[in-house]
Length: 305
Image (tube, rainbow, N blue to C red):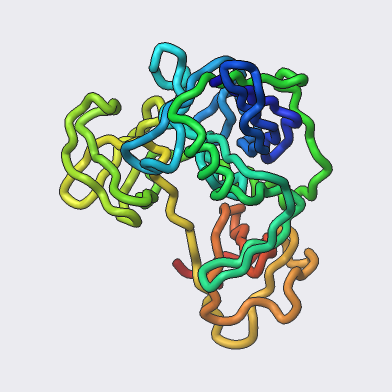
């Protein structure tokens, strides 16, 4: 079987496309929509992969075992400059990490559960992904896939608010040496002696296990965990959220649009004592924070780690 992934739009936050699979007679047997990261020069974790012809092989090991296809070069090697590129299910551009999400239809989703609340942000999310992935997995175990477009990496910048652009860029930032991070896998993650699947396994790490990033090499991360150090695929390592807690003796803490006292207040009544906020960056005596779906600045003396 052969597949064509035609990228319709290269956008700021994502790439949208259509995946079509035909059998040996040229008859279409499967079709769905796709969602990938934007084109960022094939950079690890923040870019979709280059256009070209690859093969997709059923993945029966590691993360997403039995739930994904592994994208490889025709000779069986990893995508040039990348590792662990998969076709799998997911809804948001933040789910991809360089992989290809499949589904049917797009919408700007608002999702509210006990654990999280994702607001509408003007960015399209992909729908019916899990069901679509099941259909694809039941179709075949391997196929050739050509990835192409009419634009050849000419990125279409959508009109989007500046604050949202900054938030997206923050989400897409790659790992850095020194980051405090945690393991993010469905099952277990192999810690190896070196940056290759051919290296021996030191131990297996559990989901949510805390680690420190010591080094980075071609989509591998050298990490330090309790009493051990080794290498893992950086696809399964997430940075820890950098949180602070509001500490005021009385009243509230104002969050402002810019880093000065005359700037507009963003939240009526301010932030409450003990309220938890995400710290994005430091700017002189001010901290840029994300709280209650607003991004603004607070004075650093009133925020404690």
